[in-house]
Image 1 (cartoon, rainbow, N blue to C red):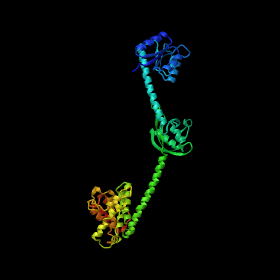
Image 2 (image 1 turned 90 degrees about the vertical axis):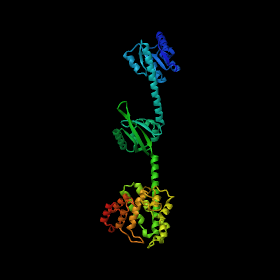
Image 3 (image 1 turned 180 degrees about the vertical axis):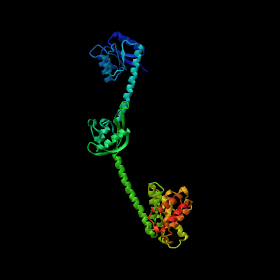
Image 4 (image 1 turned 135 degrees about the vertical axis):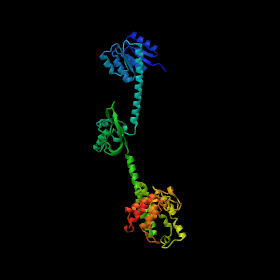
Length: 467
């Protein structure tokens, strides 16, 4: 490591020579001995020493204090004062400069080396701080998001270029401006200030702000206390993120999504009507199953989005029946084995019709599974237990209940009592017990519109006890 380079400024030749000898002995490099403040400034500029050892009383028009002030401010070189005078006036003048210590003549060699090394360390620390501040300032100015610092009254103390660019004000206009001017309603700003005072910070607070031209923008504000030394609060510092474009894009996406959902609902309803037109005896069946399934899902606290998908799937669960000849669907007598096997294909036909449509819910799988049973006795794949969707377990019970209480070409309505007895007897076998219990609750509470004359409430309560 090269020796530290020192410039000596001393107008007494004997003292200068002694200093030169001592410092060389201690391992420092002496660049020059000068006698005046003018020479000190000139040599410091030319030689760029690591340290200036400066006497206060010098020959020439510029004394050591004045020379040190120039060297410190313009050249950023550390200055260590030395003087035979330590009166209050001299000390007070030294305090006004950027100095790195004060040696009173005569001083010992140990005092000299200690003061010099402390001056180097302090200068090293100061340079690190300056470098850190430089990097911070570069980040401050280069940030794409506006950064601001305001006092406790909300007046702008400092800000970056992005702040000026976003709001359309010049630097001179913004400095000292109240942040309240950036809000269409000053009450909005006052509410933020109150919240800041009570909580100490705000994070991603969304609010409408106003540019200089009066146009409104939607912003997210994050800010916290700026401390002044100890616990005292100097003001607030924070960032502003313009989310106007994002909010508008989200609104457009939301509008498009709603339009797409409406189209989707329309398509599903058209499918449901297609099935009902081909099979007049089951007209309204899918709609009633959909309502019963929806109410069961609500009782079971199924998430809203799942219930929504269940309701739509239930409204077209028999879609595949469009492939079954109408004379079979409306046949008043008992079906032959071949006819029954043909009807059993309708879940897969429905699935194949829907498989290429991208629904946000598992509608095609619900349609495919709606005749499966938890004991594996269902069709088309004989699924069991956890392999069956919860939506299907609900739809299965709703489908059975609605079918039994409705008229069919091959039999009259069996009534709610028979339906309750069937799902109760098969709870835990064909049907999920929790779904059965929820279905009975729906019927007792009259959550669906059914013929009240067909509901013997005593029998329903008894069936519920049997669960």
